[in-house]
Structure formats: C-alpha cells, structure tokens
Image 1 (tube, one colour):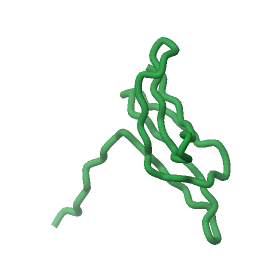
Image 2 (tube, one colour):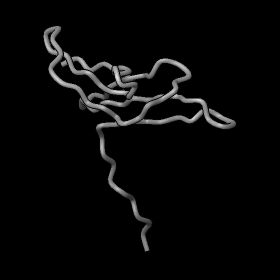
Image 3 (cartoon, helix red, strand yellow):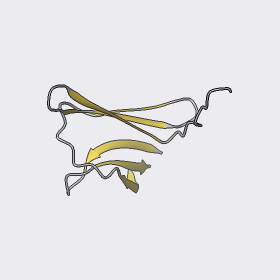
Length: 78
C-alpha cells in the first residue's frame, strides 16, 4: 500500500491509497487549506501515518499535524 497526500478536486486535503499502481482508497481530511508549501507525509515503523501542513495565519504560520495514531490521555498522579 502506498499512501500519498493530495489536494482533491474540491480543494480539500486528502490521502490517496494506491496498491500495484491502482487507486484503492481515499480519505478526506475536511480542510480546505491555503498551504505555504507542500504537505509532508511520513510513516513510522508500525505503519502509522503522519501528515503535516503549514498555512498562513494572521501573524504566524498555522501548523497542523494529522495522524492515524491515537495517544492515550495522560492524567497527572494525585
């Protein structure tokens, strides 16, 4: 399986999934970003995907991280 980040035809950011050169899946991320540069897509050793984007903010860049990994909520010890 080969994942690829893409701007979809409706302007949303999405992930495309290819197998043997054929498109087998698509996932929209629901954003219509105005990107400052290319999104960066990487995977870890367990196959989790991480997609980062940078968009123009009012005074600084708005940085976003999308991930297929879920992290447990850590609560402080009493």
